[in-house]
Structure formats: C-alpha cells, structure tokens
Image (cartoon, rainbow, N blue to C red):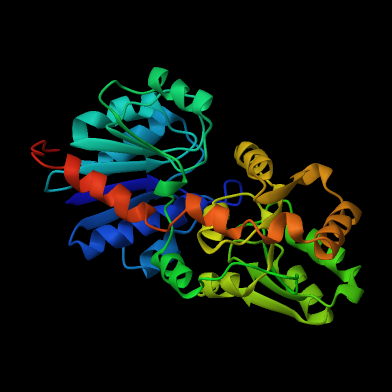
Length: 355
C-alpha cells in the first residue's frame, strides 16, 4: 500500500499524535507498505524525529486555515506517481471540511481522533479512549453511514516494546511504593515535571526512587535536570528509547493523562494523574471512576502541596491503586496496532483511484 499520514507535533499540542502515528507507520513498513508524512513546521515539531525513523516528511507552513492546509496538502499529493491507498489524519484542527477537499486525491481516509465534537468524512475512524455507551452512540451522527468505527483501548496505538515488556512482567501485584515513573508528556507545556519534583522533595522520609522522563520538546528540561541532580535517588532520562522498560520497574506513575495512559495500562501501572490539556480531562475522570488511577485535577488547579499530600497518601495507604494492574491490563493488551493495520489492509482491497 501507499500511505500518507497528516499529523503534527508542537509545544502546544505535544508529541502524542506523531508517536501513535509512528506506531502504525512502522508496522505498515514491516508489511512492505510505503509510508510518508505531511507535517507542519510548528515550534516543537517532530519532523526530524520522524525522518530519523526512516520516513520522508513533507513540511508545510503552520498556523493556517483548514482550506489553506488542504490546498498545500493537495499540492504535495499531486506529485505522487502512484495511487495513494490511505490518507491517515490525526489532527484536532482538521475535520469534514478538510477531508472533503482531500477525498478526490486518495482512495480512502482514516481519521484518528479523541473528541466527539465535530463531523468527519472518512472510511475508517479510530478513538482509542475508553468510552461509555452513551458517548459511543453519538458517533453515528458525526460519521458517514459506511464508515468503519474502531472504539476503545483495545485499539490503543502502542509501540511493540510495550507488548513485549508485558509478556515479561506477568505479576502486577505490588505491596508497597518504592519506585516512581514521572512523565508529563513530550513537551510538558505547563511544567508539571518541576511541580512534581518539588512535591517529591518534600517527602524525603519516603525514600522513593524516581525515574524522570523528559522529551526533546520540553522547554524546561534544563531546570528539570538541575533539580534531579540535587535530589537523591532521582534519575534524569532525556529522550530515551527504553520507556517501556523503565515503566515496568515502577510501582507508581505520576504525570499527565495523555496517550501514556494506555502504555501504562498495558503494563498494569496505576498513577496519580493531572490533566495538562482539555482533551485529557474526560479520560482522566473515567480512569479515576474505574479505580485505575487517582485524578488530581487540571494542572492549573493542582498545587505542589496537594500533589505532595496525594503522593504521601497513596504511599502510606497503597491498596486503592496497587491492586488494579490486572484489571487495567484487561483493557489494553498491546495488540491495537495489529488490529488497526488489519482493518487498513482489509479495506484496501480493490483500490483504483489515481491522483
């Protein structure tokens, strides 16, 4: 197949869109498909990272209207010599208006989205978040009748290392909290990492070992490292490739409620979570309701003192979180990419459209 992926990363939206699209791209490449990306040159973009993974990236200007974005995307697609079997779109600022303009230039369109707030014109739709039945029904008014809909964490787009680490870590029962995995997203726009470290610094009597994960797009990484260097048993990890391994060593997660949620659930790791973006609030509340995590609130409302109290509470009375790993793993088995790619291959049969 020939596949083009339209997605972005930036300081504003983070890195999650690109990372989950890379999971699909890498699996498709293993199956001898050709995959290219189209991405805006926004501050904090990950175009270089995508290229380092061996994919071509067509760079376009950022902060433009849907119409202008569609026009520039079409200009790129017109230069392809072969039919484009799938256009995969993972972008909160693009909807049916954009997709209607692109449909004439590709065989099929797949949309990845986490919201239920706008219509789409696509052949395959994915929302990997946990959704209650009343919200699932809303999709039928937002999508075409013949659109195949994939809903829920069973389709979570995880890298293969999480599935492999899950096999190695069979026992999720924890008796105490000794090691913490701290990660607040690839860019951490609200500087939650520093907030969490300052909270942990108040709890020296707990003798926690902390693994701090910081992405290349984090504008506060220098400050984070300086704090880590001063705290005992605190390890600073910058743009690492062994996140699954580090996560598997932890007893508790502290951080944002983004796509890392499904990575944690695959490994059965519960957490104290903070919403750092609007799209994380619903997922965080559901995680708390299901008993897998403790949701502390939106970043603007969570103070250092409140976070310190939450860490102490869960450390001294760990039962609420420490025995939820097995239940969380039932939601996410790590095979989501395989299921999504299988749907892409199945619906690609009989493609004939040319650009």
